[in-house]
Length: 191
Image (cartoon, rainbow, N blue to C red):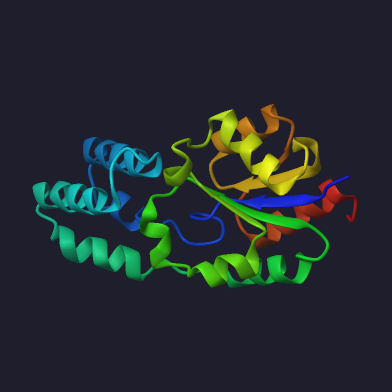
């Protein structure tokens, strides 16, 4: 029986913040950007260092780093339909956010908002563990008071969903709301 729904943030509950930057950079710079993001998400560099390194990287490619970063951060929108679904079903299921993220998360949610939507929020930079490390999935289950087989984990990155399945969770690769709701109904037997 499913008792908990666990959601990635960027790419599921919100737009990917730096996705617009990925499209304007050449391949070698994209790899550098992803490395910076990975370091920040796992808590190895600070939020300030993350922003500075991204700005410096963009400047190397004749892109106004400060302006591009500010625009990317400002234009990340919430998935209001999915957040409303979470609120509407919070009495039925335990809800959690499990996100590979740096402290930039606080630019998008207040603590009161996170408390309103989620029973638990597990952030990689705070835990110093990032998906797809199996420990972060188990930690989320432990904090929710559920077993992995009682959870549905949703992420836009298939690698993270595969890792969740390996620890025993059901998993949905997020491609959009309609597909998500259809797959969730199948898992819950409400099809």
